[in-house]
Amino acid sequence: MASPAAGVVVIVGSGLIGRSWAMLFASGGFRVKLYDIEQQQVTNALENIRKEMMFLEQSGSLKGSLGAQDQLSLISGCLNIQEAVEGALHIQECVPENLELKKRIFAQLDQIIDDQVVLSSSTSCLLPSQLFAGLAHVQQCLVAHPVNPPYYVPLVELVPHPETAPATVDRTHALMRKIGQSPVRVLKEMDGFVLNRLQYAVISEAWRLVEEGIVSPSDLDLVMSDGLGMRYAFIGPLETMHLNAEGMLSYCDRYSEGMKHVLKTFGPIPEFSGATVEKVNQAMCLKVPADPEHLAARRRWRDECLQRLAKLKSGMPSQ
Figure 1 (cartoon, rainbow, N blue to C red):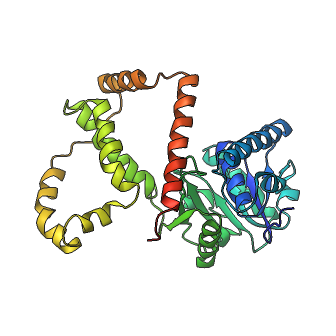
Figure 2: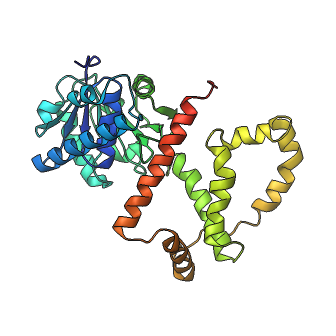
Figure 3: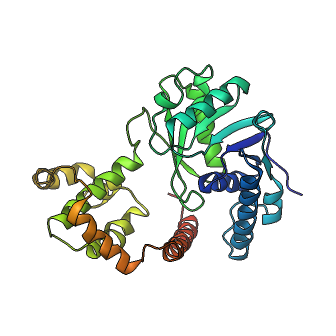
């Protein structure tokens, strides 16, 4: 039988992100309560998790030291939020990206939790100061933003409210490390956090290059997938600079003027509409038709690629 770690982790919301979190915490040996407001949603989520875990075990990609059945035995559904939070050490909110909905849930949780549990949101863009304003337990609150799909992409951005206690961030950082994720500390809140600010910068320049007729949409994607992305799968942009010269000082000395010259030619924020969106859409649909069946198949292919990459990285020498 599984031997659960001390305490309970509660997942609020049983959609894709909630299910992924449940699987991750179970892989670390934690007992998981999956809370939602409708029995059918919980039932469907537990069945989806069961199928996914069995498939992962068969393909040799299941995380953690426990087998699929033992991990599944750690996950249970719950329709009563008061019962769900009993004995919880961590609560991970995963409801739709709606500020008022999330605020209502955190206000409800604020009334029933003790002074020990961490309240965490999976939001990708809502600021902690918006989410947790006025809560009595604000020192126990933070954002823990995963990357989709969380089971294969380990990054988690930890973003504190201005009043979040440092111990809350430390505990959450340790918890994420324990379940195999790669937490980063965002030292103060900012729109887009870090990942989406970097992602949107790339998307913005990619869009301008296509819009100005510099490169085709398909070749633009190739620049990332067979170029920058191959390096960035293992090292970030700052270490890339460091390695592409005789260290960072050498890189900046050699290339800073050239970088500034190019950066000054960047255009305004694109509208992401009109003729360019039609052009990009046509190119993307030639590769992956935008119907549910083709998109789902391509996502499965993407997830398998990420799974293999994660396995490759886990077998490499430690940094």
